[in-house]
Length: 413
Image 1 (cartoon, rainbow, N blue to C red):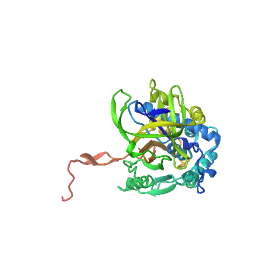
Image 2 (cartoon, rainbow, N blue to C red):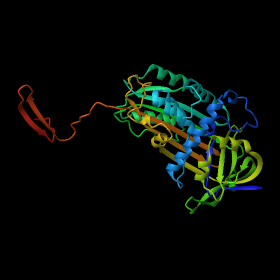
Image 3 (cartoon, helix red, strand yellow):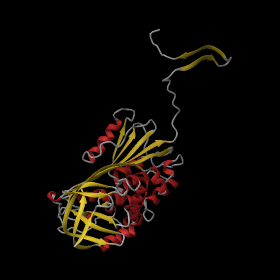
Image 4 (spheres, one colour):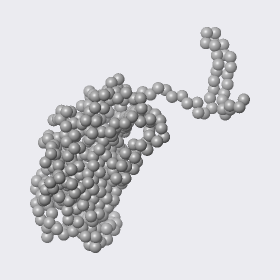
C-alpha cells in the first residue's frame, strides 16, 4: 500500500480554478440527470493553450511570492476577465493580450463562444457541487462606452453592466457588495478606492463549494509536523484517508486525485519527491505535462495525510502579465478604442483576490479578478486647498491692481 504523507511541501491544484478551464477532470461514477456536462463544449485548441496559460501564470506567481509563501490563483477567473478586456482592445494591445491568453489558434468570436459556453454550462456540470461564475462591468456615469463593447459583454459574458456615480463615496461599496454576494461573503473587498481617473472596472467572480466524494473522518485527524521550505517544522491538523483513488508516481513527484461529489470536479494534489521542491515541480509543469499526468493516473488504494488549511490571498498582476507578454495594455500606448472610440484609455491594474478552505468535508474556494481602466490624460486639477497667492491685473496694459495671499479663508468679512 502506498502512503502519501503531505508533511514536506504541499502543492495543490484545484480543478475548479485550473483544470476546468479545459473541462472536467474525470467522468462521474453516477451521472446525474440534471448535469449540463453533455452541453459543455471547449475546443481542443482552447483547452490545450489555456492550460498552458494556467501553468505559465502559476510559475510567475510562485516566483514572485517566493518559496516560503502560499500561492493560490484562479486562471479561469483571470482568463475570463482578460477576455472581456480583449474585446475592448485593438492593434498591438489586442495582439499581446491574445498571445498572453494563448488564444492564437482561436478567433475572437470563437473564444467568446467558449466563454459563453462555460458561463452557461460549467455551473451545472455536477448538481451536487455549488459553482457560480459571473461577470460585471461598472463605468463612470456619463462615460461614453462603445455600444458594440457593451453588447458583447452582455451577450457573450452575461455581464451586468452598470453606470455608477464614481464620485459618490458609496461607489466602491456597490462594487464590493457585488463581489461579496457572488462569493458567498468570502471575498468582501476588491476595490480599495475609486480614483478621479478611473472610468471602468471589469470584474469576474468564481465560487466553488464541493464535498469530497469520500470524506475524511474528523476523528482520524491528528496533529502532525509539516516541514516548511526553510527546513523548519510546524504542527498542523493532518487529515487522514485510506481509500481507492486515481494516482500516478513519477521520479520527481507523486500525484493523486481527490474527487468531489459525482466526480466531475476534483482536486489533484502533487507532492514533490524528498529531494525536490514545490517550486521545481511548478517549473516542470505545462499543458502537455498536465495532460500526460491525467492520462497516466490509475486507480489504487493509498493512505493519505493532508493538512486542513484556509488561505486568503491577494495579488497585483500588472508586472506578471507584462512579463507574460502584454505590457502595452498598462502603458500610455494602450489601444482600448474598442471601449471608447477615441481611445485615451489604459489598464491601471489587474488584481485577484482568492479564498480557499479545505477540511474533512470538502473545499470552499472563491476568486474575484478586478481590472481597473483609467484615462491616459486627465484635465489638470488645481484645488486651492492650501495657502495660495493671487493677483488681479489688467492684461492689456499689464497693470497690477491687487495682490494677495490667502492663508486662512474667511467668509465673515
